[in-house]
Image (cartoon, rainbow, N blue to C red):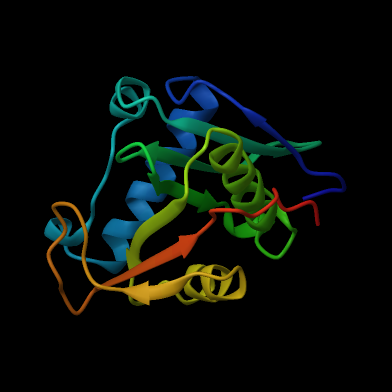
Length: 161
């Protein structure tokens, strides 16, 4: 991993995006039973009007993330992943901040997410960026493998640092 991280909106069906999503799916299946892995295929991200971002360094794609509109006020954070060699590089923080900024610019007021209870780096990232725990939402069922978070972004300016 080297130097500067560039984060841009990309088509979730592009080769790099699909590769990152497949790595994320494999990682989740290593940690959790299949019925607790809530994979959203790239085509569904497109169909739902997601904002999908890819982070790149000089060597290529290192991470991705998306927000999917749930209603006129709320987006769900989905498909959030950073390759192991790029963790602690700032890529995940950059993706999260960029997705939050996009959500604010589009007029959304809330962000929600579901993550695995053994995904300690993700949990630390979300807690460090103002997310608080909440109960299940949408079609999710509560399980010992699942943690739910939310964040109000109403009336906030997009993060710049």
